[in-house]
Length: 638
Image: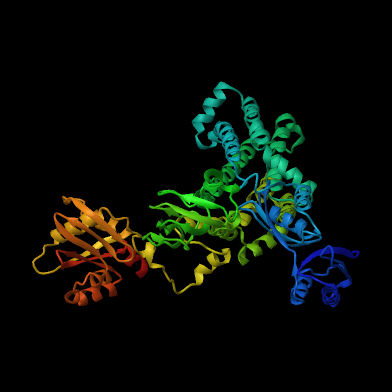
């Protein structure tokens, strides 16, 4: 191997001494023959010995106090079918000068590549994927997954054709062995050679039309000297089909008793593998559903205030600093800071907390949350990929694409698996021909083809990444996010589980749980007065009180007044009624000492206590909490 040249972009250099410092740091690294740094272009050109590693060079730049330019790109890849495909793509990408790391996931059909953008471009990476025999798909073209509806429709069409032709083919070829009467009936209709020709007619479209994807893939794999699952299927079905055709048209070429046909074997192989590929494609689509649902949380448009007017724009047109108006019930389109107005925002999407949070000027809001009431004007601070929601989506995607150690082991095995299988298949044929019983050719053929077909490495390449996808996708739907796939693998060894309370072991919404009355008051009276006031309140706890009083007839209310941070008051049936926290009662000059012990007990149990006062005296208290879900205790105990 000859020496190679690498260009590294470097940020943070300001003068000639910076250049000298970087050159000295790079020149001292093993494998560097020459290092030249240009301040104007902010690039370092390195001449390296064969086999020199890039990561230590980048670390040397960082230790010198500067930042090497490194980018990461995710590229969808169509055409991969097994772990051998994964190994080949990773191998060809890793050989590219400037590529630091290449990780390919078969289940998500994506490659994640860390590279030096000043040495190699994304276009060059995609070209290398094409040269390896696969099709790169940009994320802009296909943001969710390369497995599209068209792909599924193609599988359904081919699988339907294969099934319709394979079922009668199996009945014709194998039926007489299972039901002798069927064989007698078939013989009475037409001679055996004619039935064999019918088998040929039924099998041909199954093998060469429904199974064409395996032949295309197999030829591409052989052309690139990287045999994989398609190669094994192509060899197995071709051997069965061609052997049968020769036995049909030239039976005299075979030893006596060996001119059998195996059309049904070729057709069944194609049909079953098509079924497996279809189920695999369906599984990929379902496991990507969690990410699609997360994406749906983001608003598609925003009402931006420009030149004093509200203009509705696509979310892509919003930039940091824009003023955005959000009305009651609307989803907040992007992250920002409130500059005007106030309202309660449902942040359960982000925090899991059931109680909406009051937002005023100066408070931060997060894109994807819902403004329940009040009009908010906020200034956008983060947009696009920088928002909290986008980061959550990216975290779930990275978890699905990551490779735990067990998958890396499977990929290393798969790199040599298919060539070994081909050798074993040939050896099996030879051994049966040498020492097998008569008819040797039949036994040798069946055994060698069986080795090819049973050893398809698709399960090896798909088992772990599919498990990671299913676990992370199902977890996201249930509100559990995995930062890395290795965390899922580690679940098998955990001995302690720490659960968030709200929405996990509780229902996730407030409910009225307790009523305590002062002497002379009934519970229904207390609830009626509280609900009458709360029916005009926008506070989240008011909803729990109203739900509990649904069956009660509420009196007319007038002179309602909300006191932010304390509670609310109104005139109910001619009486002055106040509902709020203990500090509100103190503000009104009302004594709550008789309820102090009960309040402490309820608050120790995690409940929110509000008092109800009527006619200048405390009538009782109400407790609201997020109750435990049915079955949570059993789940935790398990």
